[in-house]
Image 1 (cartoon, one colour):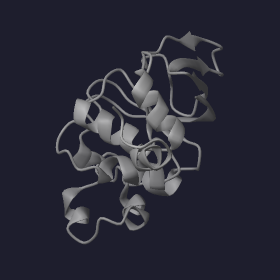
Image 2 (spheres, helix red, strand yellow):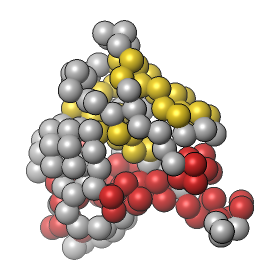
Image 3 (tube, helix red, strand yellow):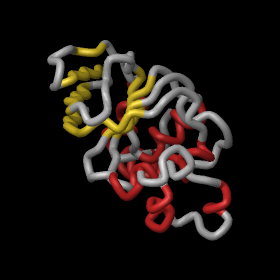
Image 4 (cartoon, rainbow, N blue to C red):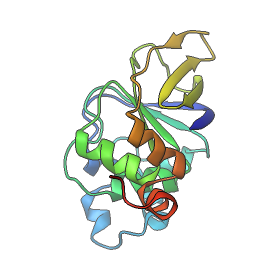
Length: 168
């Protein structure tokens, strides 16, 4: 597995729940992430979705993705062109939904990352290197478990199963 990303940090706080990622009122109308991406994080910042650029990276604090287990929270982030979320910790259900859909969840110390900092991320065989290009600092990140790294490398669980069959 080898993934290389560079992007602009979009900094959020702690306890960003799935209803903040995409409001339940929006999910009543549709679960189409191509429609919902226009409302990404609107309860946190009404202008967030309109300001997202492809390649941006979400940077958050503790407990990212808490709340309901709706997988659309992960797929709407991907639909907006964001390929990874860096957080101090993730809700476990959100973490698995992210991996299963090809969104890279990176657990690391995010305290020193400021809004709009440029980040470089390298993922090789589950080992993650995060570098803040503005400060030049490397940020220690937790390794992604091997099977999850393989799923991410395939682009998500559906593609992984197509390529390798069901995991043993």
